[in-house]
Image (tube, rainbow over all chains, first blue to last red; front, side):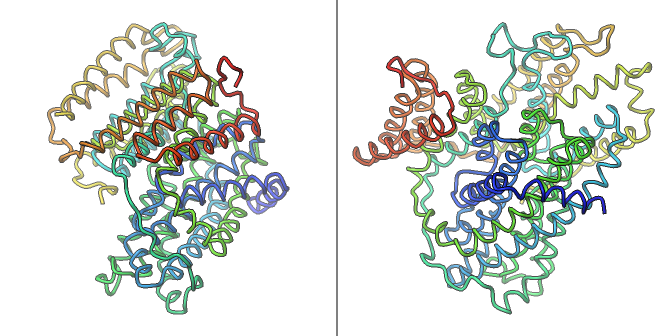
Length: 494
Length: 145
């Protein structure tokens, strides 16, 4: 009942012309980002985050969140029509979606993708509405040791979901810690790793890091491959799926919704893992698995539902615990911190307008996205004609402006460039960059929790073993870490 | 080869970070000092670097760019370097226009008219959106824009 009352408050906050405008704008940008290959939701969020500094926190967060889930909707359009994923979570949609388009069924595939996304997104939002307050109510009793243990467990879970080597994931997390330590230590004013450079005393700017790692490095990878695309269908007809399409799709949509939501909650999970897992599940339980890869509607319905449901799931640890499960939610956390808001168990009670406003905005954004992606799909199809040679210099300029705008400091451009080159090289060597961003954002909170824990205890580090919840969480983290190094294959490997 | 060099770099970076962090202090009268957390991070980096160097974790045949692909990548890096370096002297508008023109001509091999048109449109849109509509003070050149 509290949740419903809270949601009503949220709708009261979001249903104003100004907030609706930013929600619609975010949905539009998110769809655009999803449709255009080479611009991921993370880079787009980083580029547009400075624009939200002048907005109210509700409008800013509603806009950023809608970019995140909007990209999940838009990504399927490019996968189905061009066979190039608009963003990473739509990679598997290429397999069957594009085959359906080649068979003249692009409209039905786009329709199932959009409607499945809508249903899954709405179901996961209902679950978010019910679960997040319950989780926050438990977490409100947590002190610094429990928060520390929770963040450690989150980072260990992240390692389970990354692509590539676990050791490389550990290294990325440690590098994120180190990069976050640069600057003045807020506790005692000591300079760390600044090497007498005044530019480094304020630390390394999050936006420069994210735009470099995910924007610039993506551009470098794209200009290297110089991918050429062919649009399969110029005009889209028959968007409403047939009775047979619904018959084969409704179960995958429901399964994708549940799976996506659960994988969204798990730290390290998120839309990309959810879509891959859903595809693997549908193929495994199918009576005719050989249809997959040749235009099976279930291969579109499941993954597209899963990646949207994962967005709602991933908002739960962010909004109720203040712990980001993936790089995008890490950036959303950074945005809240920049607005002077500390997410965590107290967030819902201290800022109910913002908490419920963001949740309500996601319901509204889902409706916007359904309208944008079904009746207006023709516009997005035309956008796919924009050649990359026009797109990439523009994205590069936006990257520079986005980086500069955070601190009005030209030094950040060099940081962006350095992280861009590093990101490009590390991706070549199969390093997953998401753990770096997550640990970079979490490091100050983790260090603060550890220090507070050690200060409040007369027994030093033993406090971590003396408190049952802390000890339990750390034991789970240790067991998971031990199992990880015995495990030959990770979830993200396929 | 590149991966081995990188792993050696991780080891050196981790050791250097740990030494620097140790100098910042570990524990003081008011609890953990500034060096504790970076020391743990540095040691973890060095240890993982050693594990990666001696373990069988090498990437299978990373595809490094060659020929025209390499030049396109280097072209974008050069363009960004030019933009980052020149902005403080000539302002954002001029630096970005030069960079875009260079990128379109050298990386994408576009024609002069197309390059000039795209450059003009892109710089005008970005300056108009951020500089005027959003009121963001973008760096200006000696001529005031």
